[in-house]
Image (cartoon, rainbow, N blue to C red; front, side, top):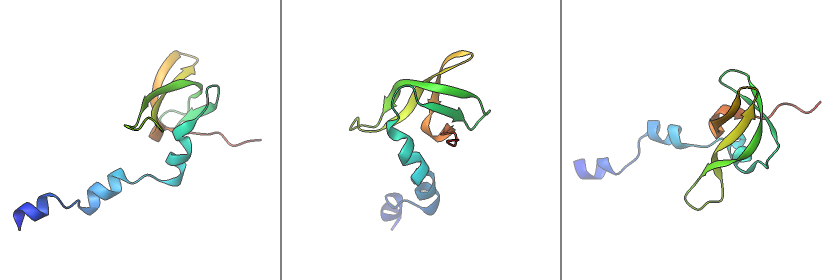
Length: 84
């Protein structure tokens, strides 16, 4: 039984790896897109995708140009500002 339990993901692992609708929408942002950091509220513009998933279809982090220079932001730390 112990060997079987090792390969079965528990609820905590499922919650940590589950992507929400907002995260999947942010996986293919074009260069020049205005984004805001959820960590400190700093605005920036996407320069390019920094890292991608194994199949290279979705970005997992972006190079973002801010007032302080270029930074690497994870997709989980990015939100799109509302359109006015």
